[in-house]
Image (cartoon, rainbow, N blue to C red; front, side, top):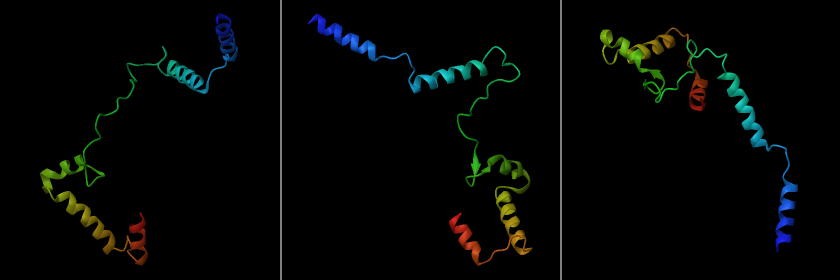
Amino acid sequence: HEAKIKSVLAVACRNQSTEQTPTQKQIAQWQKANDIYYGPDRDHKNFPHPKMAERPPPTRLGFLPAWWFEAMYNKTGVTGPYVLGFGAVLTLISKEIWVVEHQMIDFTFWA
């Protein structure tokens, strides 16, 4: 019984190679990159690592920053920025800077 265990251990030891697996190689590369990036030569005082915000900044209409609306609120009120945007679109159309033709529907539908 003991000889069988020794032979199994010998086969297992023989099958283990000294080569690293791809995962171990990737970890070693990341470790090397971290050592370079966060090494002793990095100026952490003047160039700290950027912190990611916990939440994205607030928006209106899904893509406009809320601070654009807040900046105009004192002068134009709540609807001012919306009227400004709608007025800008109407101006572009009336001056034929933005030409709306039959293909425009296809563009807006597929975009």
